[in-house]
Image (cartoon, rainbow, N blue to C red; front, side):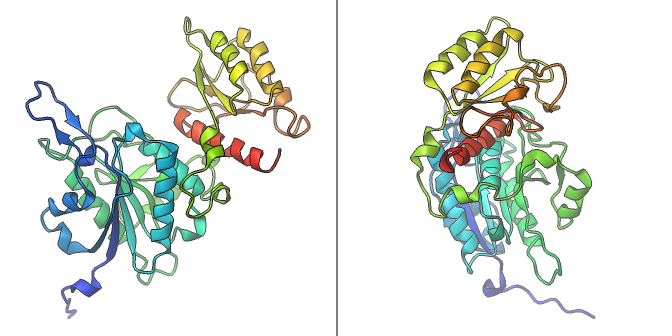
Length: 360
């Protein structure tokens, strides 16, 4: 017969909660005749205190590096959160990290961190969560998501497992999505992040992820971690990198927009073209001029799913692919692969920064 002993304060998992605002910390606007709320009105500590019994399930450490609606996310916020997470990942006094974040730019933040957090530090659960409804709404989903994120993180603590993979990604509505695969699928609904690479949030998550086989071109953990110091809070060159998206829509003036970019010379331009990235023929001459002026070009699609691979009917810029011309003389032409437009911009910003720093 096995006897179980109740956990004491000293044996509870040591969990850091990093709160950044978002809808999960939002409150309804009193007296509004429509369904309206303000994001980022509550602290992370108040969110935990408001969930019965949650405070007693861990030894909590609370941090709030900033508090915003995530539509207001800036590059400085991304660097600030990265530095805080690196410090907590290194801390011997933290077993797991939870992060509350707004859903609007959850994808941008997680993909940035996936590419820039040093991979050797990802040895403890790092679990993001959020909400689609503010904290005081009827049927608010934040309490369930935060409680579920804690359950998942604690399940995945290494204990005596011979092979341990620490989860890093998003836990909402009982599902876990690895950081590199997170995409907001809908503007509304509690299942807004249920995607093709979401799985049950339990200790078998890593086996489930391998079964789902995410695309290989999402990059590798820490791919660009050496671009920043571990405590970098600002990087002028990174913040100056401009990566605009030009949508090829009839009547939207993509040619005019591309000509305007010739004057600004951004680091890179993402062309969101119809179908399988079928760039209109009249855009090709100005894209060649941009490439000759050192502006990289990424061929992407305005279609949400499917991605853009090399091939198909568009090959007009193939002679600008990396390796075909002397390094540094021109911009680089490429396809977005399986990256969403949001991920494509994050990846391009980091890639062109790398090229700039090593003098390519």
